[in-house]
Length: 181
Image 1 (cartoon, one colour):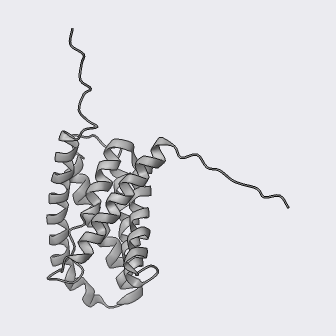
Image 2: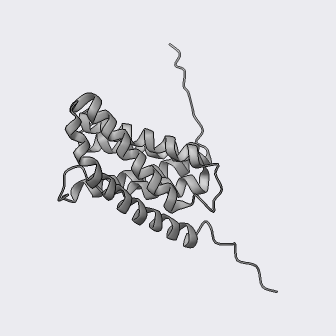
Image 3: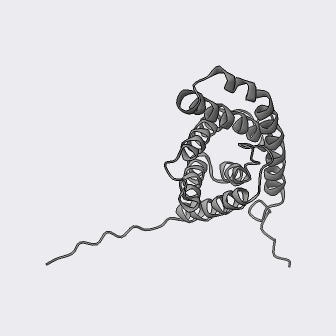
């Protein structure tokens, strides 16, 4: 009996994505442990990691990190294929669509903070669309929009500022030391 073995080589990008996805999953797990005063409002700390990856390694890597975070965190939290999983996935997909649409725009208009705000609002829109179409098909859900949008805006600003700070002072953006003569 012969066995065939498939070996896959992990590239440098694969390792970056794996490390960043692990960091995003860890932040999602930590966030899930923090009680929220209002159900459904979370700071989205893992999105800081997605913004860092988007800026450093591009959209493809950011999409992998975001989607791996959704699946990995839901598996670890025991919510895989639950309504919460689909709300998170829908939010992540709409957020990625918004980031992808603005990625090629001038950096003077769209930096980490504006990307974060746009992604947070798109995430909210995706979640509300799924909630309305599947879970709560009632116009009353729209009464939640002002409070949820304000939270998304606030957390989007804070997360964007955190990502901008990390990008400005991160080890991978610093120039290599020059040898002295």
